[in-house]
Image (cartoon, rainbow, N blue to C red; front, side, top):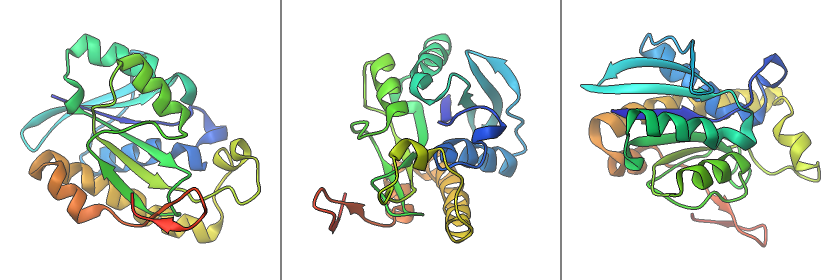
Length: 198
């Protein structure tokens, strides 16, 4: 069994914001497979299906971003799913807008939702898919991530959301190494502001 979790904030106010990339990718993936993510349990909206012969549970924590780990800890414990069978999808300020980055494991970076997940699960050894939302460019980062995207960004991000959803299929069917080779795009900004590889 796989748990596929998109991170975001619940409610109409946050629906189309940069911080809700995880929710938007999960919605796209659910739509591709005809799965309704509507059952409320474990402090989350959940939906179940069979994909590539695997049972999958799609999860959208409803705790607000900074407490996302509370919901995922409940899910992982209840279903007794190993960490390597968890895939977490979220936005990343450190990647250029629309960049896609899949990794097998790693730190939370500056993302508070991931900090919560890693703290609650007591491990960072699980795959993740990051969607680049670009730098705040002088704006307060909290205002930036909870702000709606511009028209120019929207087209770029819509394409990334679709590719990220496709990459989940690739992970389930072909494994994460192939998915990383096929879907990883864009560069990470280094601390001095220059572009660098992740």
